Length: 530
Ligand code: NAP
Image (cartoon, rainbow, N blue to C red; front, side, top):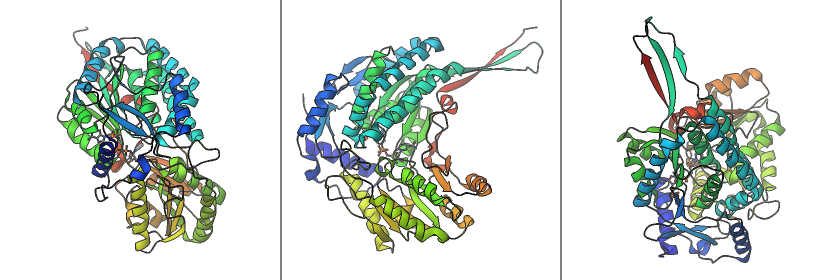
C-alpha cells in the first residue's frame, strides 16, 4: 500500500483550498502544525472508536468496504493538534464509475420497495445514529475540531433529517387534474430522479450528508456520497450504520479522495441524474457548468455573507445571546454564521462593549477539553485567511476591540475577535470570514441597514433583532435572503426549508420542500376513456 506523503497531501489540501477560494494565499504550509504522530490522548480516542466498529477507512462500493484500486491513501488530521488520526482510501475515476454502476443497479430494487419498507429502514438508521451519538460526536471532534458537546448536537441534528424523511417519504402525493375533455383522465405522478451524487463539505461532517441522503433515499433514489477529504471518517461511520440498518448494498455508496477526478466522473455519467452539493460558491458554479452537459437536476447550498442587524429598539440581552450564537457556532465556520454585525448608532457603543465582554469569556481549546466552546479552525490555510481579512480591515481603519491574532495555543487556534468601525466595502464584509471574528458596522436608519445587508452577492441567512412587530415584518420582507431569524440566532431545523437567494444556491433542504429536489414530475394522460 502506498501512502501519499505528508508533504504531498499538505500541498494538495492547500492547493485545493486556494483554487476554490483564496488564490492569493501563499502555498507555504506550516509543517509545525501537521508533522506529529498520534498523541497519547488521540491514540486512546481512536482505539475506543476502533473497538466500536465505527472507525472505517475504506470507501463503500456496492455494500463492500473497498480500498483505492491503486492502494493510495490520504491522511486525516486532528485540527486541534495536527495528529494524523487515520489514513483513508484516496479514490478517483475508476472507483467512482463502479460506485455509479452499483447505485444504478440498486435503484431498480430500492425505488420499487413500498414507502413503508424504505421508511422502516430509515427509521432503523435514525435509531442507530442516536444510539451511537457519543462515538459519532467523538469522530466529528477528532477530524473537524468542534467542541464535543456541539459535535454530539450535530449528530442529533443530522439524525433528525433521517427521522423526518422516514415519515415524509410516505407523503409523496401525486395529483388528479380535472380534464378539459370528457373522455380523458389526467394524472400527475411523482417519481425518484434516479442516481444522486451528494458532495459535502467539512464543517458539518454528518448533517450536510443526512440532509441530502434522508430525502433522496426516502423518495427511492440511490446515492453516491463524496465527503470532504478533510472529514471522511464521520461519513464512513454513518454509512456503516446505514448498512446495519438494512439499507441494501449499493443504495448508499461513499467515494473520497481526488475531488476533481471524482467530481468529473460524477458529472460526465449520464446515469447520475442529480447533483446535490454543499460547499463554496466557486466549486458550486463549476459543478453547475459541468452538470449542463448531461442536463442533470442540480441543488446547490453555497456560501453566505449573513448580516445580523441589531436595531435601537432590540432587547439587548436577546440580541447579544442571538449574535453570539450565530457568530461563534462551530468557531465561526458555518454558512449561516453572522458575517457582518450591523448595529444602530443609538446602541452601538453599549452593544459593542457587551459583545466584547461576552466574547472575552469564550473558552478556546481542544474540543475534547471540558468547558471549551471555541475549537480550532479546520487548517492552516483557514487561519491565514482569517488573519489576512483582519489585517486588511485594520489597514483600512477598522479598530480591533478584542483578539485579532493567532491564539497562544498555536496550531490552528485563533483568538475570538471583535472589530469595530467596519465598512461594508472592506474584504471582511464582502466575503465569508469563516472564523471567530465579529466585524461590527454602525448604521443610522432602517433603510440604510437594509441597503447594507442586501449589498452582497450572497443571500443565505440574515438575522434581525427588534422589539417592533411592524419592523420585523417590513425588514424580513425586504431582506434578499432565503432564511431570516427574527430575535433568534439559531434557526436551522429539519422541519423548515434551508437554502439561499442569489449566489448562495439553488433549491431547498429540509422540510416537505426538500423532497421535491429528488423527484421528477410525470404527467399521464389516459385517452379514449368514454
Ligand atoms: P469546498 O471547498 O467547495 O468543498 C466542498 C466539497 O466539494 C468537498 O467535498 C470538496 O472535496 C468538493 N470539491 C472541491 N472541488 C471539487 C471539484 N472540482 N469537483 C467536485 N467536488 C469538489 O467547500 P468547503 O471549504 O469544504 O466548505 C466551506 C464552504 O461551504 C463555505 O463556503 C460554506 O459557506 C459552504 N457551506 C454552505 C452550506 C449551505 O447550506 N449553504 C452549508 C455548509 C457549508 P475536498 O474537500 O475533498 O477537496
